[in-house]
Amino acid sequence: MTFEKQVVLVSGAGRGLGAAIARAFIENGAQVVVNYRRSEAQAKALVEELGQRAVAIQADVSDPLEARRLVNDAAEAFGHHVTTVVNNALGDFSFNGDAREKIQTIGWDDFLGQMDVALHGSLNLIQAAAPAMEAAGWGRIINIGTNLFQNPVVPYHDYTAAKAALLSLTRTAAGDLGPSGITVNMVSGGLLRVTDASAATPEAIFELIAQSTPLRRVTTPAEFADAVLFFASPWSRAVTGQNLVVDGGLVRD
Image 1 (tube, helix red, strand yellow):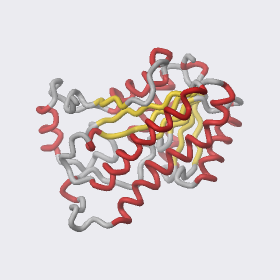
Image 2 (cartoon, one colour):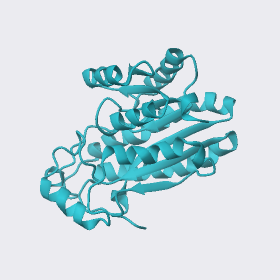
Image 3 (tube, rainbow, N blue to C red):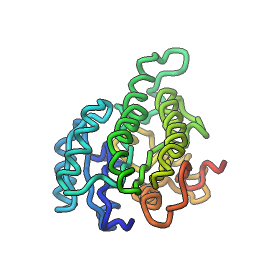
Image 4 (cartoon, helix red, strand yellow):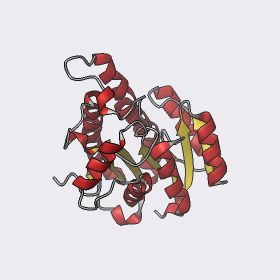
């Protein structure tokens, strides 16, 4: 299915990486739902920028009823069911390793907070969107991951564990949904320059990462979004259950 025929729901798209993904889909002709939880002003400003093929819808995807309402409202807004889901929503988190709890002190509630959005929220949206995709015989689900479970250089224990669990869900969901023509993949990045979440990262860390990559620079949100579009494009029709790392070559295994 070409982008012009897709209704794309991007969770957590009011700002940061989600906004970059929404822009990329709009630039390629898709209709886009900019989901947000609290970033109402940013989401509405983004939709104003993107134009008539975008709509902002508030919902907390960690709530199954809210996720179902979001999918239904998206279908009503565009007169067509959601064809493509990008699970990008992130629980409250600051990417500053010096400020994160170490394993000796981190609490289980921190893990639950990340799991509730990254894992539970993704499951909720998959379950809400899958029936219409199955009926149509086509769908795309793209989960946003991290390279940190392959290269755990900072103590983001809760965030990394949630994203590792999301990779497992990606692969098991691909098996269940594949016979219905639905692919499920993950795109995993490292530190991005710059999103709201990475704004607290010290400049020295950006420089260190840049010098550790073959490209000698830190990946931008727009570059990361390009890879998300690949998994929604016709060129990925035989790819499912995969995890593509987009970090300038920092992680190569």
